[in-house]
Image 1 (cartoon, each protein chain N blue to C red):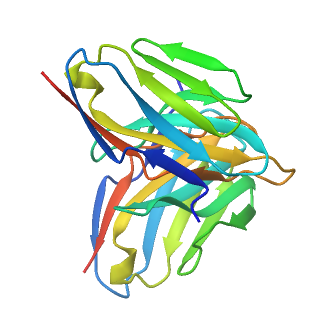
Image 2: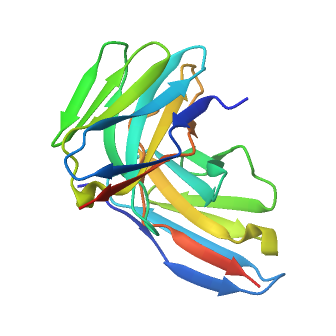
Length: 112
Length: 112
């Protein structure tokens, strides 16, 4: 069973059409939840870290929120340059825990 | 800005060759990581290092080894490359255990 599940797998939006991406997780204790953006053929680019339920972070048209079981990445009035794959990763609590567990990503396409 | 660099963007190797992938970070980070990324499987951790000369296995260490002789440099070694090691390899680093991992641009390896 996957510990991190992202939905939808792919999303097509018209420019300006706001929407949300979902990341649900099943780890027993969360140390941190991370959002990345990845363009084709490139490494993931860091967006946000969330540590506790109720926390929110914003950057330009993106806003990340966290509950005890899931996180949302809200995209407000997207532009074509927001097209990318968005990855969610969780780090489980534990003294020796360094590892991030990644979801498979949501591929976002924003059509002009 | 955090900078993680990888020695090659693209590599083509023959089955059975020994392959070295190098990663360098310039932010004095304690931790360094090697992942591979495959379509449909997402990012999977191969090895990580939390200090010079220290290493820990990730989820898929078979067929790989690593070396960290200096704090800023982390090498991934494929002792005898096989076709199933064709993949995108991503290096990352983080300052402390709980901190964000920053990724390099990736090396796309093709083993023929």
